[in-house]
Length: 76
Image (tube, rainbow, N blue to C red; front, side, top):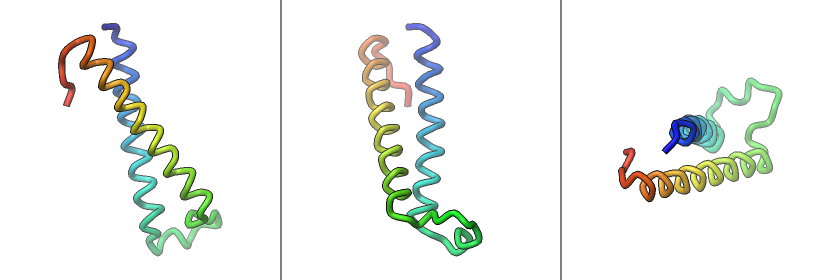
């Protein structure tokens, strides 16, 4: 297995963690978000983050299956 697939998996995992944190912060809607001029509580924006989180989860699942199939290992 090439190292590029491993790098892609690691980058996607970091992206997943970042999107998960962003989604959790924006869905929780703490008071400090009111300081910004951009409306993070807007439903289309929250939907966009939910879709990004779903796509990142699907990508992680696919890459995990590929790695387990070809290498017969479990990363986590």
